Image (cartoon, rainbow, N blue to C red; front, side, top):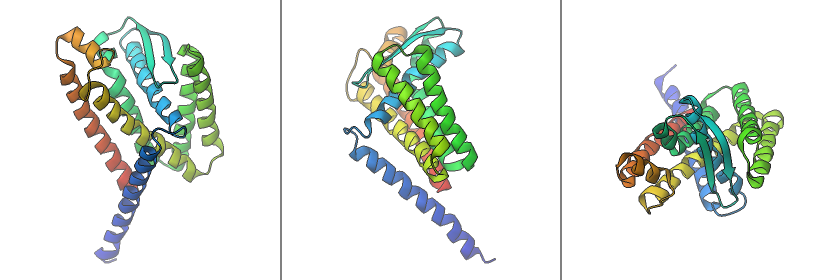
Length: 230
């Protein structure tokens, strides 16, 4: 086989991947303030708070409760653990989980993609029952978990892939915007970076820039993997 056809086969999937990622990003951005994107934004807030909780568990602590509100606010109350890791885990944990969903949506086998989508729904539902203690968050969590499980079971394989990619792209975009909004463009005394600044004496803007750099690198790697898979 001549090298020309092989080269064209490599270019086409990448082109499809670029178009897909750009299209999803534009749709999410265009509908950012609409009810259609709202459940996805709450999903990222959930990942953020769950990441705090998982960091507490991994460092010997426990999760007391998780709160989610309709104004896209969230709070994870923990007991014990390593405060530095727990505080740092929110933005970075939600970003890493989102990038994992994006990569899985592009590179895993169809059966694995369905499994990951269903497992994501199960994790949302289980975390809701165990730790979410606000009415809005509780009903959102049960509904989101059921919707993801149903999508994994009944949607065609291509639609399941699209769901994972949509969750991944939205998570990466929201995490980047959250870091920029809370830590760089303005100073929020309630942000994780402000809490870390009080604990370490290092200004919140420094943590914001550090996390922002990591977020850009992780997002770039995840998007590149998704684009290559087409």
